[in-house]
Length: 166
Image (cartoon, rainbow, N blue to C red; front, side):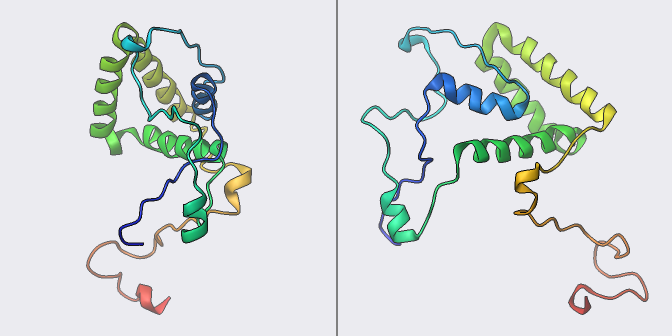
């Protein structure tokens, strides 16, 4: 809708501590320890709402939009990043940038966190224990993979059918 503004957010309004645990759980960190520090020294990683919850009713009414459950959203994001981290070589540049930013953000704990993360995914790649989907989302996601019999690129293998013929 041209010229209109809409709030798109989850309906839940967790505290910051609960939010960190909601993020940590699907990433394999069931409990995230937090330390209270003065607000003038803290790093805010997401917009804070100080005047109560954001209303998404306009988006729901006008756009027929509905929010995703916050737990489901975090599980989906965690699966995406798990895939990126497990396909390490394919996304090396992006992972290196992320590690650099994490080190800067976490200060003295940054290097320790990066080493822990690298070790975790190196071990996961060795043991090849990765499930792309959880049971709840399996029915909702359609996976499309290229046909290994079809040659990637300009043309198809001789005698094979084109995508339009399939």
